[in-house]
Length: 230
Image (cartoon, rainbow, N blue to C red; front, side, top):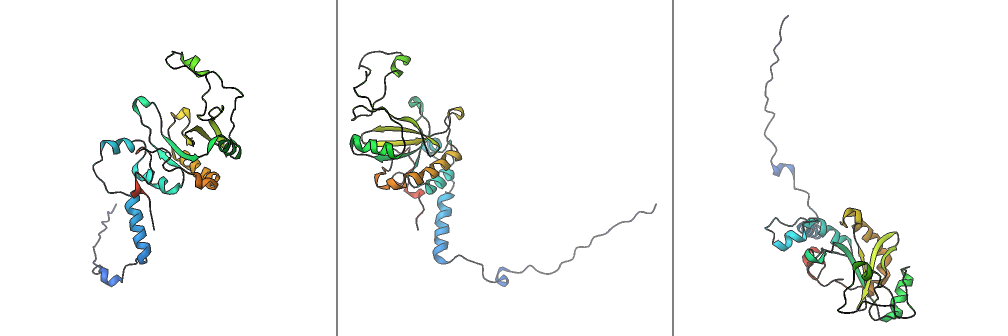
């Protein structure tokens, strides 16, 4: 059997065209280019050594992920759990102000929030007295300044499960992950918050920002550089 050898020969077609021969590079219009550079800078912050606080703040979600959703949401804010002995968890929070009991009841009715109002003040735990966990749970949690409305707690608004808690003329609406996922916030919870914003848009004048005044809250007060302008 005759064997055949196949030979290849490299042929130089010509020098690569220089950038100048390719013509001017395509550029964004001046205003758009400035906006795109600003957006890229915020969504892709430069790599740097993170402080212990930043390590904790971004341990569950990346900084770029939280910046993205900070710009997607107008009223809801991501709140990083205090952690430690607080035994809390991350939430996405919105807060509305109200002026007294009647105004609060109107808000409840408009948002289809179920609440219980007692005709007489129910028994409450006494200061300095010890109670078992079961006995303490039997006492209803009353909203301060009312006669006597129980804290709404878990509710459903527009098919989204939320936790409602009121005090000092502030109603807090919080979204968290499900218990079976250890309350962990994911893209799904952020999407639910975005959907609920259409429900709460009519209450823009009542919004309290930040809903919790703490650096744990990703909001313009503590992280103004996360918001894109222009």
